[in-house]
Image (cartoon, rainbow, N blue to C red; front, side, top):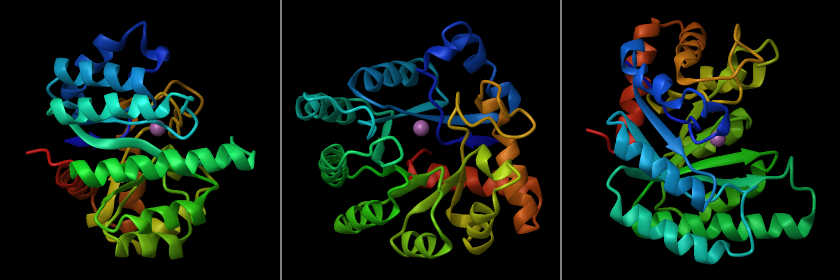
Length: 256
Ligand code: NI
């Protein structure tokens, strides 16, 4: 059974067949899904999915590209959701995105929003799901400021050295379809180096469809491709990667 630890079913690309698709997952060997939110509205939506589907869990939070000027108030409501809904298992996705945000002032706000949510995770004893795009140094700095917080760096794109530091801090690393692309060398080096006990698989659906589905709408049905890619690098059976990455996700997100 696979655990897709990061998929966005609140995306409107699932509007036409969301229920049909999600309902088909358990029969297709996808036994668990974690749906992270990107803002307050999305946090409410993913909580409603978690209430509906027993195998789906939620993370609530504000994505670095999705803060608005009311973010502090939004965060108060997000905190209530996290406290009152037992299927909220993480704060996410949160972090920094310097690829889309070039303006120093915008980046400073992203850092403030990230720190506030790390503090929230610390207070609520929840793990975090970190989005780090072209912001490795600042993400690592802020991560280190919250030494009691654990979590996962999703779609990990940092160096082997950064991976070592995160593993030392107790973090997990999770990988998308990027590791099935031809130019994936850096991520594959990280996978080779990291213990299997600290790796997770994810689709980041509807984005990032793995080969041979690249360019299509992604869904958790394709998460087996990331298990296959990791198995190849590690030289172990796919069933072993499947079992261990699922255990890892259950451990981090406290799913029995
Ligand atoms: Ni995402």
